[in-house]
Image (cartoon, rainbow, N blue to C red; front, side, top):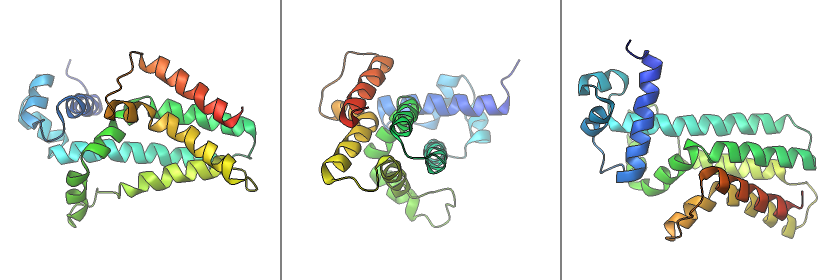
Length: 196
């Protein structure tokens, strides 16, 4: 039985994400993605008209998930329990595919700027939106009357979860730990910073 359109679309996205992170965006072709999936390029084009369209779909998914997280956070009363739950939700999001998407965003700024400059491309959302959403998460986790020291601890806690694994890789410090172990340790560090 052939996979449904939704399943095939998701398989394409997963294979592309894996290829983009292993070989780079420019080092991956639609032909290679099609070969990995054992489908024709025509079948691939049915779901995505270009490699750019696959990349954009990955970014849009991350932005949508972050928007949902922020919307949830806005509805919650501030408390240490809220801060703890927000850390859990950020970790759940960023220790999945989002981590690799953030890495793609960082590594492919010229491609993204080119896509954003294409006025005909209505799918392009400003990647700066991700920064704004991360900033909003930090704001939601920050008590209104806190001092600079507390604000910096909150920023660092969130950054430890979102950027910790990526930063280590960029510095050549590959951790010999599973993603689950890294998530657990990142959350522990973030909680220590927030004293929760």
